[in-house]
Picture 1 (cartoon, rainbow, N blue to C red):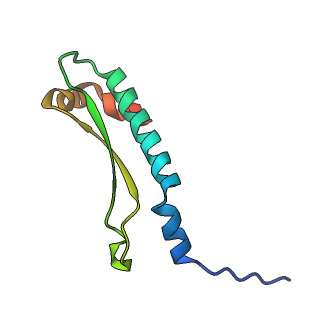
Picture 2: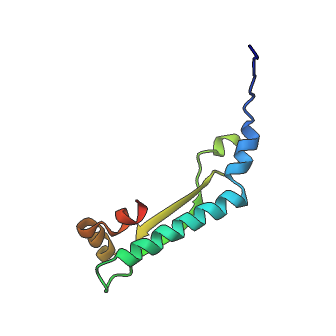
Picture 3: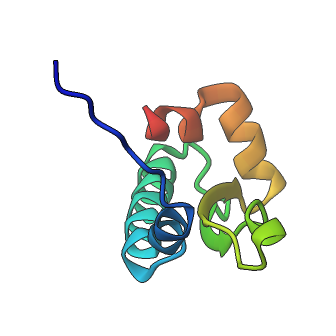
Length: 94
C-alpha cells in the first residue's frame, strides 16, 4: 500500500482567495445575480437591486486582507417589499 502525505499550504490558499482571478469570478457571479433579480422585479417604480464586491476581514488575523465577498442588496424599500412578496432576488440565486 502506498502512503501519501499532503501538506496544507495556508499562504498559497490565501493568495488564491485574495487574488484578482477570484475577485473577477465573484464580481461576475454577483453582477449576474443582480441582473436576474432586476429582471424579476415586479415593481417598475423601484430602484431594484445593487451588486457590491468587497474584501472580508476573516483572514486579517494573519495580517492580510480577507477573501472577496459578493453581495446583492435591495436599493430601496420597494425592492425589499418586492423580494418579500415575489422573491425576485431569491429566484435569481437559484
